[in-house]
Image 1 (cartoon, helix red, strand yellow):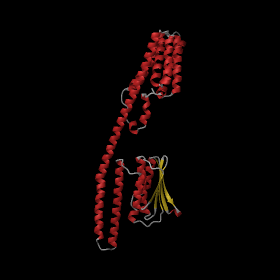
Image 2 (cartoon, rainbow, N blue to C red):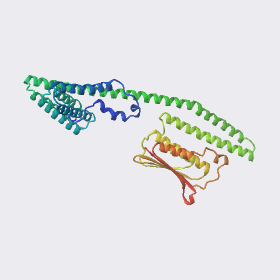
Image 3 (cartoon, rainbow, N blue to C red):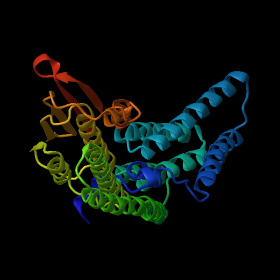
Image 4 (cartoon, rainbow, N blue to C red):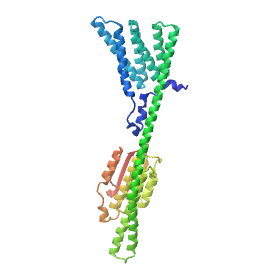
Length: 400
C-alpha cells in the first residue's frame, strides 16, 4: 500500500463536489438515487436511539438530575454532529478534537453506568473514523475507542479480539463501499455530462448545416449574379452612368464576398473548427491592406473569447471602410498570461466614403462590441488617437 493511502482522505460520496463543480454541464445535472433520504433517516434514528438508551437505563429522580442529564445528552449530540460534519468536509483538526471529546464523553458515561449509550458512541466513533478519515488518523482513533471500551467493560481476550477485529473490518468495508459508490457516482455524472455535451455538439452541427444551406448558398448565388452583372456592364460603352453602376456592383460583390467569408467563419466556430486567431487576422488584414502584429505565445483560447476578438476586428475594419476609406490600419494582438489584448487603430485622413456606405448600418456597432466584451468580463474602449485626433482606435481586453 502506498504511503499516500495512509495520509490522504478517502473518496467519500460528499467529496465529489469539486469534481462536479469543474464541469458546467455536470453541475447542472440533477442528482439521482435515494442516498439523501437514507442519510436523513439515519440522522434522525441514531440520535433518537442514543437518547432512548440514556434515559431508559436510569430512573431520573428530581428535576435537577433531569436537567443535567438532558444537557449531557445535548452536548453529546452536538459533538456527534460536529464529528460527522468535520469528517465529511475533510477537516482533520476539528475531526480529531470532536472525536477526542466524544471518547471523553463516552468515558464519563461509562463511569456513570450508561453502558448501551457508551457502546453506541464508541462503536459509531470508531466506524466513522475508519470510514472517513485518513488511515493514519482514523486507525489510532478507532484503536483508542475500541481498546478503551474493551478494557472498561473487562472483556476477555477472545471478546476483545473479536470486538477489535470485527469493528475494524466493518469500518474497512464501509470505507471501501463508500469509495466504490463515489467512483460509480462520478462515472455516472461524467457519462451524463458527455451525453449532454454530445447532444449540444449535435445541435450546433444542425444549426451550422441550416446556416450553410440557406445563408451560404444565398450569398454564393448573389456572388455569381453580381459577377455576371459586372462582366455584362463592362461590355457597355464607357460613361458616367455606366461607371457609377459598375462601381455599385463591384461594391455589392465585395460586401457579398465578405459576408460569405464571415458566414464561413461562423460555421467553423459552430463546428469547433476555427482557424487560429493569428492566421485569421492575417487573412482579413490582407484583404483590407492592414498590418498585423502578434505578441506573446499563441495558445488555444475559449471559443467565446476568440469569437469576440474576430467580431471586434470585423466591426472595426468595417468602420474604417465606412468612415475613413484609404486610411492605414494596424492590428495588434497580445497574448497575456490570462487575457487577450487587441488594438485596431487607423491613421485617419482617408478619402470620403460613398454616402450610401457611410450611412449604412444601425449605428450600434461599438455598443454591441462593448456588450459582447462585458459579457465575458472584459472591456472595450474606443476613441480618437494621433495628431489632432484624426485617427481612431478600438482597444479590447478579454479574459482567456
